[in-house]
Image 1 (cartoon, rainbow, N blue to C red):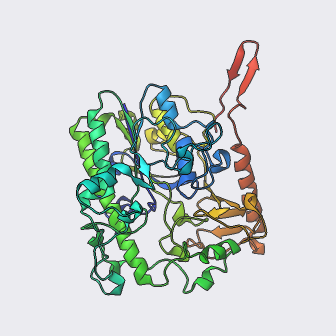
Image 2 (cartoon, rainbow, N blue to C red):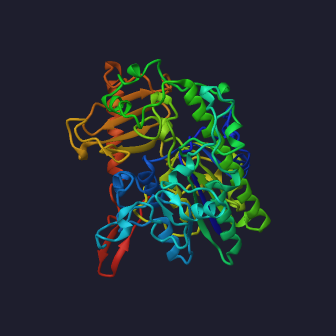
Image 3 (cartoon, rainbow, N blue to C red):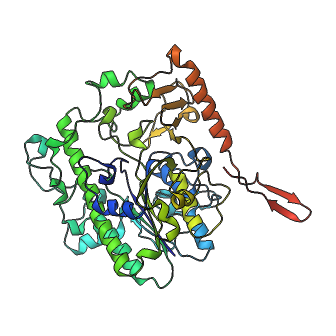
Length: 504
């Protein structure tokens, strides 16, 4: 029994042709969905990458694991799926990155591992080393092929061939200045395939792909798959001044060049065309990986999970990147294929239950027949897949959190009249309403049925005060329910410690 756990960084949840997206083509992921279960309402628990991935790997909400930003150390006392499967006899591997910053407590302050957040997840065995946010092996392979390597290797993701960009009169978005087969996506999938083919016993691996994460520059032919002129303009009001009236936090974000989207719709359309092209490139490479599993006789003994760490604003609400509270930053794809006959009732189905990245660790452990640690805030998806139905006890909403003491490593000190420990928000989102609670700023309430674009804040509307109070209570109940349970289910008796697990 093997596990292939795949993430593609910054993938918006609607961008699968299996979900009826009018433009993006993802035939290999569509086929995976036909053989597995596609979860239509799946959400990340935090942004940016490190807090979200910590939730994914530990099964915990950010309010419990407290990795609040890129570079925030992950508490060494916490468990994760890699440690759990290692204790069960597996030697899990990582192709890509986990954005893990080690806990400095107990480490020498001069330890070089404390200078970056690209350490592998604790419990991982073999992995692809990263330096300065790029794969060392990939850079070496490019050097061997004669590519010039810039002082800042991250430029390899952005350097284009010379020419006129689309919004300035070019025919298509300019391509990346390297061959498709030399791109990092292709390299990582090759490495993963080679490793799997060498395994002589059951294996578990995490393939963590950077793309379609920015910079939005795709290699040929993916730069020209989608015509920018045919793509929809971003969902936003006519001016940024109209957008920033919604909330003081949003106004602050829109004043930051890092997050403020270009004014020109043509620039956004070019970015979007490249973003979609990078998605199809990922899909094609996953097709190679899936074919390798089939030809190697491992397809029917492998649990496959495909998801992302977060979404992308892509110009919607005048924002780019991932931040804040809008759905675009947190709505992500999830496809799970369990090859066993027990999963046949859910095979080929698209389920509308609210699922979260905290459910992935419990699902993997459940598939291996391992106990799910008490720290996990999520639940296994296997019972849902094995019946094709949503259990009555399943959550009725999605939750996520965002800590804005820093925005992309830039402190927000002085931007508001409160400090770092009050710079946070929490979201509860169901099919009807979305409530955003700020620690020290006014709340937001959206009626998603009447206002799916989240443009009208109803928190101050007298007609909605009863509903507002209801969602404040829901938020409090959610936080109380998911306080730390690491020891609360253990009692010391004359016979020794006794554990009694209670369902979530």
